[in-house]
Length: 143
Figure (cartoon, helix red, strand yellow):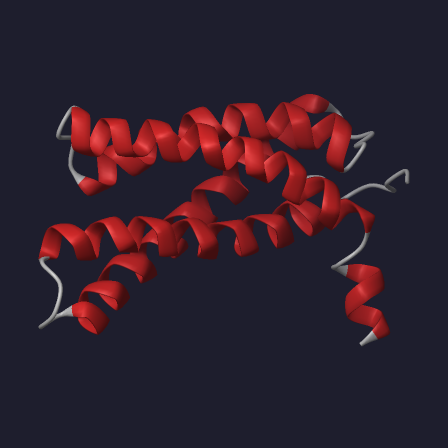
């Protein structure tokens, strides 16, 4: 249990969550405005929102959360790979899972909205692990 605390859930996790609150608000508002306001489909609405959120997230997490000393270009490449992989996994799992669980008592429209929220949760967990150990974790971090 101490290994989990020291290696995964530590001061960087608290900072990551703080940045994540801001990032999630920006992404969620944009995602639902695109989906409900502009009637974009599930994938385009979530993708545009996550690209915008990823740009904000990179700069805040690079300097504030992980206090990275990596070269920004290479950290950016690793960050982009991480975000893309986490996005595809989270949203590919969320939609079919939520539609399956809610079939029979929710409309497809509401199931998709719930899937977007579930996808956000899955993405957050996967993204933290990826940023901590892959995107910004390839060098010694400062406290």
